[in-house]
Length: 112
Image 1 (cartoon, one colour):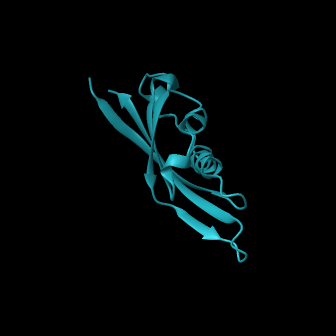
Image 2: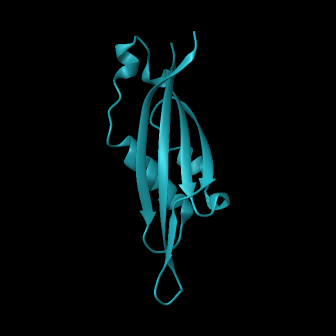
């Protein structure tokens, strides 16, 4: 058997004030996951806990994302998190704060 991609979920998350990259990343993954209900595992005779999820996050400062907090959001299966430079950062007019926008992709695989 081999791991096969069975779903790709995408989302966007923001931290409007405070510039918290982890908060934006968690919200992006939540956006991706909470708009779907994957039934593919059970349709294929697998448990939802058999899913292997690769989470990809894009933010302007990847080193400022706590990947453990992002990973803790997965409701089923096992996962990994990789953070890349991407997303968007918008400073406020006073230059004292910023909005962070993160993108997330969750690639779901099953051993089929």
